[in-house]
Length: 327
Image (cartoon, rainbow, N blue to C red; front, side):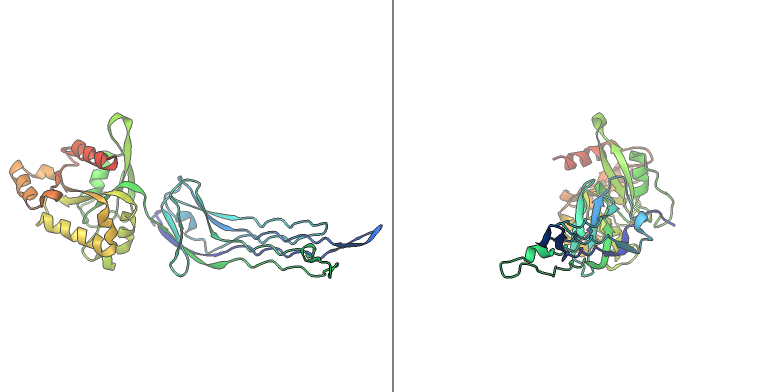
């Protein structure tokens, strides 16, 4: 079973507010002390919190219900009830929370960032608030307000500087393994990568950027074929997209157009990102074949050639990525 989980649905409930007190002050030398009932405490919130040490929603996979505490009731002597304890849901950076209507409640982008998903119920007012010239001893107080309740969907979208886009066996995992310390599964069959892998790529002068190897796309992915939306979801949070076309493709530019079209159908805004077109496994090509392949592409999409096996072109590729990230 994979340890990478990027989608969970949990029933959440914030705490009810505590009731206000309707207490009347009665002391030995003050027989008619009047109302002194305190307010009820607020119910606990349900809060989503960013945790940079988490990279998957796995800890929430088997969580079915999350419930915050209710606020305590008000007491005598204008004593306010204690607030109900908030409940925190720690999630990786890049997590989005949605309500049952699909409305986005918030998105976690930073470590320790907090977003209230469900407000705790407000505490009721004690009877001291209702004293007036015509009603010196009100014997009523407000009940606490109910909390919120419903299903919340948590959806993780990988945050990375560079996302690798390509068909299965385009060489994405091999590239990530060649330029970082990541050790993705590599084999000669389709869909070797079933979950995203992240790697830190070192650049010049001890600088670095994050690269994401994301499950391979196929034609029709936008309609849910293959790994479908599970793949495309993670493309949305990458700063730059690196298209990988293998050198042994039958039609290199056609393959690029299919990939581009799947992104367009899923979310046209993805094509507003900076992207780089590359041809992998270039150790299989001589200079003449490279010229023929480059000629298939229009000038604005001229590909970079590299080989993860021999290291050819990797330095140039990293230089281009860094330049686009910091221009």
